[in-house]
Amino acid sequence: MENIINVEKLTDETILIDIAKSLSDYEDGQIFKLCTALTDEKLSMILEQADEKSQIRIIEFLTNEKILKVFSYMQKDDIVDILGMLPTGKRKAIINLMKKGDRTIIEQLLGYKEDCAGGIMTTEYIAIRNTLDVNGALEKIKEISPKTEVLDTIFVTDDKKKLVGTVDLRDILIDDGKKKIEEITNKNFVYAEPETDQEEVALLATKYDLTVIPVVNKHMVMLGIITIDDIMDVMIEEQTEDVLRMGGVDKEETIDSTPLESLKMRFPWLFINLITAFLASMTVKQFEGTIAQVVALSATMSIVTGMGGNAGTQTVSIIIRNIAMGNVKLKDASKLIWKELLLGVANGAAVGLITGIVVFLIYKNFYLGLIIFLAMIGNLVVAGVTGLVIPLILDKLHIDPALSSSIFLTTATDTLGFFIFLSLANLFLPYLV
Image (cartoon, rainbow, N blue to C red):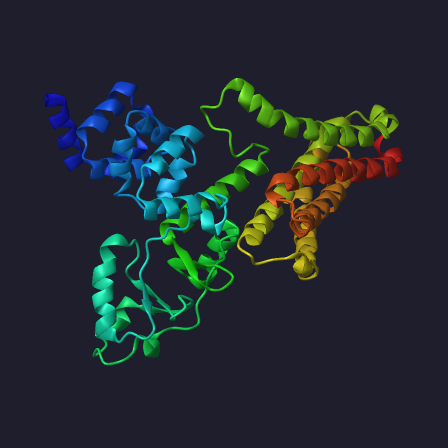
């Protein structure tokens, strides 16, 4: 009994979200104590905020009847996310215990892909008829609001339940009550269809500064809404995925993945990188004679390719970010390529000059410093152009640019970097030996 009181006291003094975020550090006994001590409402708050593995751990300590009681305090989209992780038998058993209306909504939401608008929408929203007057609308809002997630934006439908616009709650509150809702409705609104990719939804919210986006079917009948908290989750998820993929890491890998799971997810990309490394190696092989005569070349050529890779990564990162934001397409490449050419020459000259001076001081050979200077300019131009064009081409081909850009970029800067440097060395060979 004392343990239960302590747990209740803890939740009174501590923000529930902090508990939810720390559940991965809890032992099974502590999880069980939370499940038995907390009220259904408090447990629902923790369940909503916990990570997926912690959600499953909590569910395992609850009976199906207890799960339904906890779910009664949660939004439908959060319930669907949890149900989607459960074994089929467990999921069906819980759904069968639900009321008919709730069961229909949950089954509908489960039918959508998890990464599309239908998969992240919630069905708790306020929709009113456009034929109501403001006073009638206020009564309807008071009736519906306890069951909804968003109150500031009210959705307006016609007699066929088609979405015709939105109205701010503020506009309703300040009206004298005599106007029809149709008169204060904003009929220019942004919406998504259930099959719309979640990343496109996030772009819409960012572009138009929205806190909620309605989801409609092909007949413009409302199916649900996507709220700002879900949009933020999508943005974080997509950005995290892009960062991981740029590093050749699968988004499914976590620090808790087993060595075998990590091996399966990492090795394919390492193998692809190995193939590209062989291409660079074959380029170097063509100049074995030149390198044999001037040993200093083997010690300095990696500087050129290394700086090319770094410069290219800068461009790739900027372009991928703007692709994700919907700010740039392949058709825009011609406008941007001159900027990258100029930056390549300017940065290459600056870095090349410094490197050339250092190399001259070390090897006492002016021409070796000159080769480094020219090669650096050439490879940074290559890096800038390929860093711009590669992600745009991949995006045009509907291939995730974050997934493959770094591989092609490394191939270009290494292979062409070695080729430019060693070709110049071969040209100036009489002055190097």
